Length: 151
Image (cartoon, rainbow, N blue to C red; front, side):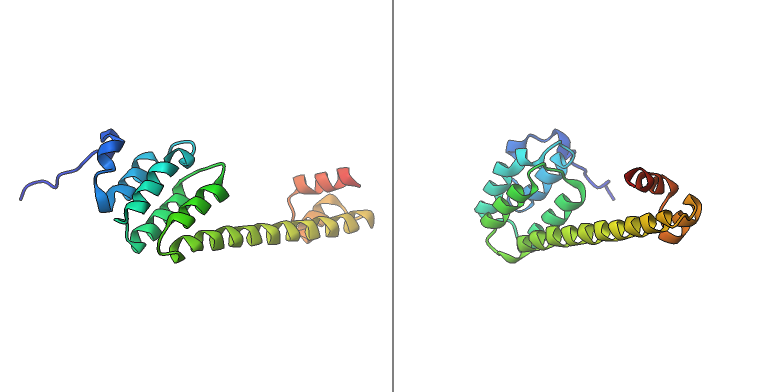
């Protein structure tokens, strides 16, 4: 039994990775996932998708990995370009669904926060103590102090 050979993808040149056909897109992402902005990889990713070596399951794995570990300031543009280039159509559409879901969750959370703050304002205006208001509104004391400053 010989040891399993490992390849350090971080020292492999991008041009060489681009020649790896079916696995190239995942290797490229793995190498660069921690870089400041994945937009810098967009051209290479589009090229690899256009070459047609990437399967639907690889595209799904790619998008999940990018969503969990990657970063880009222009997420809508980045994922929009990839979705437009992707031939299967469906796997990249889940990105739009993911962003929509995250937006809905954030909106619900903000709505709950606003309701709690309004409730706290009403309780405070009735003369209730900060501590009791914090407990009843399920808000930290620091948040109650912010509400007090708004009154």
